[in-house]
Image (tube, rainbow, N blue to C red):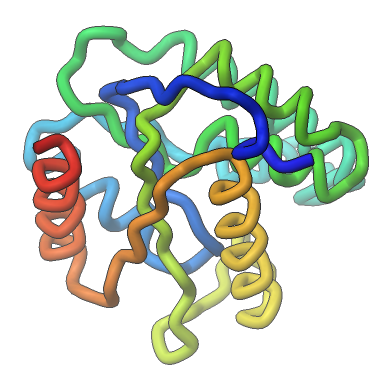
Length: 190
């Protein structure tokens, strides 16, 4: 059953999500938003991978364990974020962890929806898609371009089924991506 099939009352929130595949510009756009004075919340998966490798562990455990670790960390970040901070921008968030859990068959859509109801984001989210000409791997981003594209496609499906309105962010320099996001927020808020 899809989330949009449930009777859900849309919630307005100052918490906006930047989602999509790795290497698509989310983090650099988040940094540009921070430079403009907005509150930003970093991606937890990268931090978890760094912690694991620092302790001599493989970058990722099995997908089920990793998705649970990410969800727990995302919930902690959400709960610790300042409630009245103006606009808050998340480099991925709870929905991305839930997407992983549903893909691993360790959670169903209904339970994922209940978790999102308890910790709502703005229904408008920004989708960044990887671009092959600029995609690069690093010590935490070990997916191929094809895998990054699949992550972005799965995020689109999951977010849409959870009732989010996705805005595709065009390939622009980070400051222009930040301006695009802010302009889009003003447009949907009016």
